Image 1 (cartoon, one colour):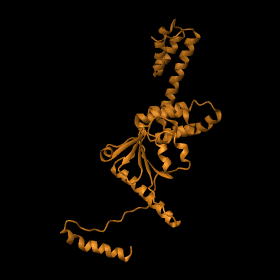
Image 2 (image 1 turned 30 degrees about the vertical axis):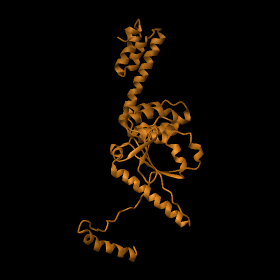
Image 3 (image 1 turned 45 degrees about the horizontal axis):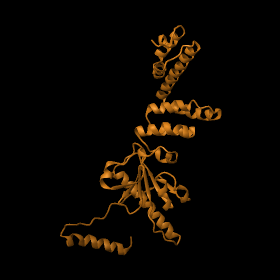
Image 4 (image 1 turned 60 degrees about the vertical axis):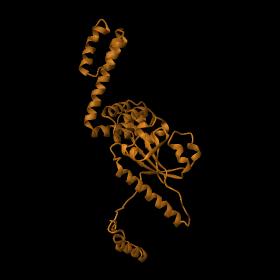
Length: 300
């Protein structure tokens, strides 16, 4: 800080209380430690004409060269302070872009946009700011001197083009997304989702079981290593999957025996077999199926 700045500070310090009759006082601000200020990522817009037909929020990117993205996953703070930190990181990028332009003998007078992706919109933000819907689950936060978009992942439609935003879902919305997206993505990605997102244990087990049933030998060989490592780190899940596999095999064996003996199942009987998750019950039915005169006798 140069001498003119120091002089101005001294003037404020000496005169503020006198001028205001003690109503206002001057204080040197505490140092703010900004060792590393870095957002989660940047969207670099290279061909804006190609995103016009995509679902929101993508078309909003057409008028920008770059967008700062902040990701708030389930369990992350969404309080006032957390959002202010995101705004601070956006401001740091704003200054960085302006300085780079000056260092290149240019001028940049734009405003760095911020897209904040989170499971939902917090109540305090709805109370303090105006949210203008620009698409399904996409809200422009106003007033704001820069483009500020809030993307509520739990409310987004299940669309292939929105998968990067949908990974921020939480609770039942995340479970719904996990079941929907698993057949659409590479198995390695699905395993990453199983490992790193906060889906329910039942859906996690369901997807791990589904992964284990893949048919491509090369893919199965690669994914089996990852799957075994995941299961080795989660013995409880491994035990449940083993039990689930034994139950599924018992159902298949029961149906095979009934089919071989030409004992037809009525819809309600088929539903009973499919809905039974108790291995001892299925095994008892399987024993009866060998000698029973009907499917109904088998399931007594």
